[in-house]
Image (cartoon, rainbow, N blue to C red):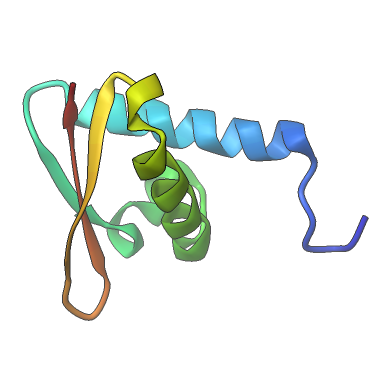
Length: 83
């Protein structure tokens, strides 16, 4: 395994951590954010958050969240709300 490759468990842990954060923050309505503003809170890089958000936005039927790429101004803004 290369230094940048992740084990399936590590990848699942990151996704679980991000989903938990999104569910908590969107509990009272919509959440709008840019990866760079939540990176420290979820202990992920902005690149990791962007990749996970793209993956999650494609699989919203399986989630209890609606995830949408909202806008792009110097960085992607994501919109999240409970389904």
